[in-house]
Length: 308
Length: 308
Image (cartoon, rainbow over all chains, first blue to last red; front, side):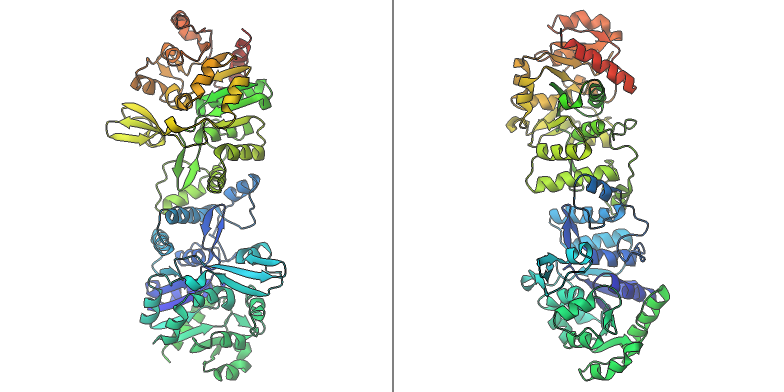
């Protein structure tokens, strides 16, 4: 059994690759929920949904979020009714949020609801939120704290970042099954998601980092950075704001206590020896995933490393 | 100022006619909320919405509910996710329910929310729920009580009806503005809606029936029945089940304490003298409203009666 820690877009590419090269039922995927948000009174779990839609084969790979071929009729009408509608929600996608919100209000956990949605969409992997309790990632900017979605979507990650806070995380527990999956895993893969705001919240849930440190299975990461920049999104910006170097070395330092191996881009091969000095193997390959073939090839290469 | 008491479909036709012949800003429309229901965790007010959409010019007149040209993408996906989806909710229509549900959860009243939606859609009439507190119409059948929407939509009004109950109505108050509007009205019009389940709940809200009895303005009704049958829907069936005759005479008896005039169909003109024995004038005309012209003509004729 392979355990995968992931956020949304970047991680979903590797998850898609993994599902293409092994039986997807052998994947347990622990998702960041720090980006979860409430819009129009609906509970939205963007990273869980991206992974669910990806494994269901209904994701919009071009946009990197939402469902393929979705329309935006309800959102346009919400805007007409005077609602703030900068967060894109497609009509099909809304069914997920409406279902989740209703089931949460009836007392079900996010884990239970995610399992229901997975079953309905034919997803055979186990998808777990990092926690069933609420964590909210806030980004500190010169004009005050804003939610991660305000920073990422509304402000298109342009504000200066002074820091990041995972509100409520210190009192949270991992969702049921997360620690057990890490203990029983044959390999643990840390996806090329944003270390600070996608993987960071997962590691901040009390008990998860410790379980990863003690895991028998190898912990294999893939760098989300090439050179000094993220492959997509603001990972480099958030790394620097949090006091880390924006490079594969910074990523290795960030994950120093949990990673056995960090797969870096071949153009970063000159950094391998410095990373190895941290006690982390740093094999090089092409880590860009532009096509389904790229995703499967990288997933295959990462999985091969677990035997080492 | 004209006050109108109405349910959904049948009443909306006359409301459309009224708005065509007088300034719609002079209409205060008191809507039944006994049919309100919760689907997918969303608060739906079918009669209010039918009237709002009608006055906004966005109603689907062919279907008699919902918005013209609406699509059902979210509903189809809700069904795919395992939700019970027999109640039709269009994508544009959903924006209304999502907005209402959020604002209710933030503590706004149904009246305030209805006013907001009216403003956003350019509706100049005042649309008031009969009450801001919850009333639920239940239909008693041989297999137990079901909600009005289950009876009307899911079961297509086929079950035998043993009675009707407006749960919670005895402790409710009229929404702010309802009693004042009735007192200040130049005329009060009772639409050709289902007397038992559309107008009945309005009259059951403590204070409303009494205000109508004491009103200075004439109270003018239009029969929803021609011969022994409703023009549309199950009014005759519910009249009989509640112990009333299914005819214009039964309608007159039902409304005996509040109506000054009941407009009946010209094919029912032989009933006029019996109705007049109840102290209610019974002018005859063509009360079917198949076209916008029919609606405006009937509205015009009804308004002309207030001068008498």
